[in-house]
Length: 95
Image (cartoon, rainbow, N blue to C red; front, side, top):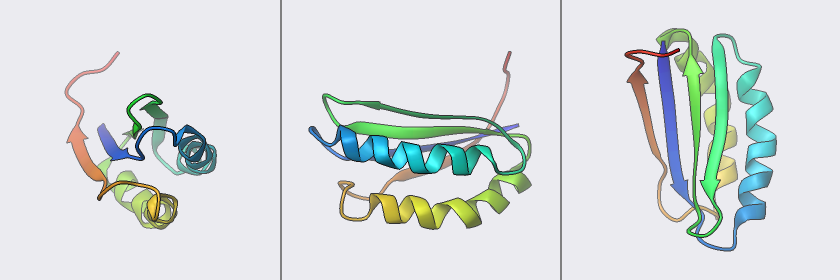
């Protein structure tokens, strides 16, 4: 299993923009092959947000990235402060 972690900053007062992005992306991600779980999270006060996605395989993550990344980039353009931090981690243990 793998976890994709995406972190980005919208800044304070941008919660509705983050909620709109979550509403668009979460169903699209969860419908991808191999997606075990997806969570869009954030802090309304400081404007830090992110997405955590649990994938069955690295190949599932790579295939979904080709589909989801353009939508993510479009949703961040003009709203996010700086570039997102996007990482893929090997899951060592889960329950």
